[in-house]
Amino acid sequence: MADNSKFEHQPKLRAVSLFSGCGGFCEGVERAGFEVRVAVELDRFAADTYRYNFRETPLLEGDVRGFLGSNFEAHKRQFGLDEIDLVFGGPPCQGYSQIGPRDLSDERNGLYKEFARVVQELRPRMFLMENVPNLLLLNKGHFRNLILREFRSIGYTNTTFVKVSAADFGVPQVRQRVFFLGTRDEEPFPYDLQNCGERALAAMTRKAAFTVWDAIGDLPADVVESGRTMPYPRPGGYTTFQKMMRLDCESSPYTRALKRQRGIGNGPPVLHNHHTKEIQERRRHLISFLKPGEKADSLPKEIWDGRRPEKWRRLHPGLPSYTILAQMHRDLSEWVHPSLERWITVREAARLQSFHDGFVFVGSEWQQLKQIGNAVPPLLAFAAGKLARQILGRFQESTEPVSERVLIQCVLPAFHAQLSE
Image (tube, rainbow, N blue to C red; front, side, top):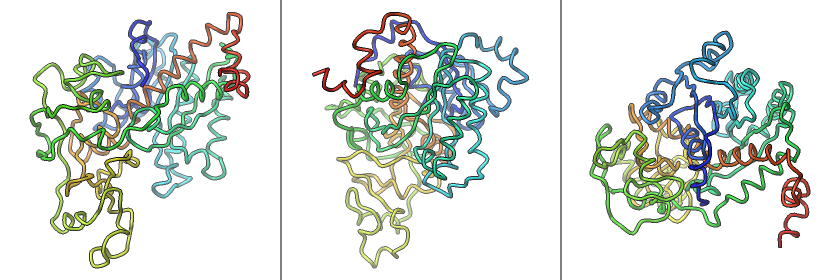
């Protein structure tokens, strides 16, 4: 993964976070060199975790509909919202997701309008909005077109989208997502935005994805009760990914000091959130027949009744995880540990979402799992933040003569590969 040390020595850009959840998107965007002036989150349990980990960031707990609007001047003064560079966030995606009913009338489908309202009022130099890729296809692209039209109608004519896989950016998980992005008309962007975005992201991708075992292989087999901690594991021989996650190691984009800025604080290193849902003996017996990477349709007929083949599923240690979802809080049977007869723990789920061990989840176990599944993985957010910085940096270039390199990368993409050899 590319080094982010250069961001530590550059001026912080100003950002506003919407639909902030527990803070995964903010974690990555901050590491890319942005200062979050205010975060907005409705869910009180996610807000509790956010406050616990981002103690210096103002959090407006409540419906995004109450942000700005009639409170514009008060919020602008309170949070210092002059000249915002970036508005970012991930509106709830359940109405668009392939998992679930895909209800076209789900009221959450319209929350992009609230995102657009905030963009219209703050006039940031650019915005980033994350969602599930099914949004692009749902109802023959109906919502995709509505979103593009909405932002273009409010003075962000240069609005487009890029599709990404989290595994390409260091997240040990096959998680497909889409980012809508746009730049304001007052500051014209002279290049093809989608092309620049795709090429910038391509330059950040890893050659090989991290696996489940890369992510959680150093964590203890034993678990604790919810709300308890355990001694920090020190087996040695850490993978590159584990060095990013662990409190006693560092690897870009996380230094030890940065991890200590989150909920873990400066006390003795302990392992938080290494607990999981209780498992009944009959279920323990059932999952004992699952081999790594297999699901229910591999089970003996006397063990499985033939219904819901996706319900029982063991992670493969040598592959990235399949998508971590918020529905874990109801049922963890799709996330069976790769070698043990138990479900994965909250901390293991957090690792698979690329939350480092300094990030502490609070509230009930049910709420913690929901927060993790709903989050934007921090390492994917870090890539998105770097993308935003690069695009914002192009504005300065656009006032100078267009270099041959920029021309090749952003204006004449068809010739890029040939000319760069």
